[in-house]
Image (cartoon, rainbow, N blue to C red; front, side):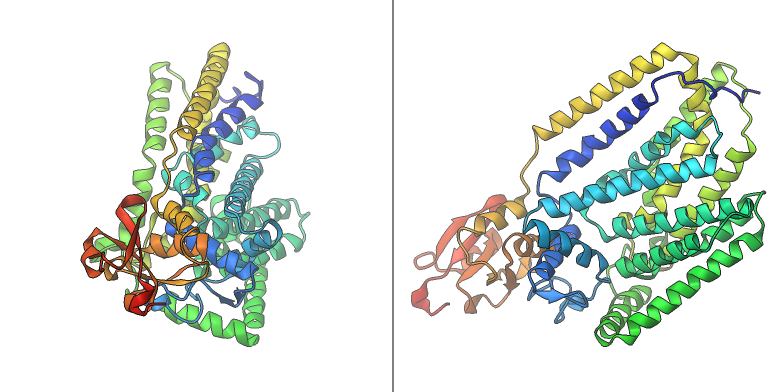
Length: 494
């Protein structure tokens, strides 16, 4: 049995961290300066910007006078709770209407995840563990998941909600560790409960899965009793109940949450909103997406096991490793399985559970990683240095080959052609293009209508070109085969 390989430092402690942060930069930095996000994130940024400018309010968030989904096309946006919009609106109020706000917000969220994942790792392995300095490993496993490195720069609500969920689990973990030593206080469950309320106000009931954390810890940790989990769980439930009661007592909040619950939660459960597919297989979309994103982790696990077998390393998992492997697997499952009830499933819905997926793999890999790094000290330093330089090279290559986004580029071009905050026409087949709605509102506050005969400006493509009179209407070419039609004033358009 090999068990004491982590007692000495075999490399500079900062080198694996430098590699991990450099790896993160490959995708995060280029995606943060290209003004390109998935349409959900652009939409949320537009709502927050509007809120900062006094257009809409916290309990009546406003996107535009048009929306591509019929069930969200009301007087205000009630598709999701408003906390992230409110938080970002504060940044817009300070820094003005600039894409640096949502990109800076994404950076803060990223830093929050890195800190919390590292802190949870250190709490789980304990203060005297030889693996305490391996906090970079779960961070690397986390950002190495394709869903994570795609989603974090995209301003998704799930990123913010997941951060609050992770903070709640961390505060519960502090309490549980101290409770075993009979030194704990109710402050930590109170903070954990507040974080769950914040998660709920970011994206609804799916943010409440950490309620199960203390119970799962009691089941998986031999040093804990189930009675240890009872007190923090009750305290969190009381905090959540009182907070929801207080919210519903405020009329604007009650109206918003009622519209949200019936328009989003119930419609999704009744399979009347967006669908990942049909039939029972649609319920497993998140599982298949997760497995597809974990290929690198399975390959690393197989490679390390193959290497240790070839070198005849005899490794017996410690009690700490075994307990934490079970804990992180069960916590990840508690965040994923409830979402399988609905067939409205997108990969980024997994974000709140992925830190625990990463911690699970880190516990599976850490003993063999430690042995590998101790086996050849100089080779480890050289390998990490080369890998870090390769990350910088990849980042530089991506920075020099950024392609402009068609939709954001068109929105910015329209700034010179169309008055801000106008309603412009759009050819009927283009009205369902969410990217058009999101970017035109985010970058020029434009709303859309299919009533093209009543407006002066119309956005179109080649499929609807014949609807216009080229002898009277002016055409301005835009990116991606789009064009702006400027209707002749003589025809009575205004």
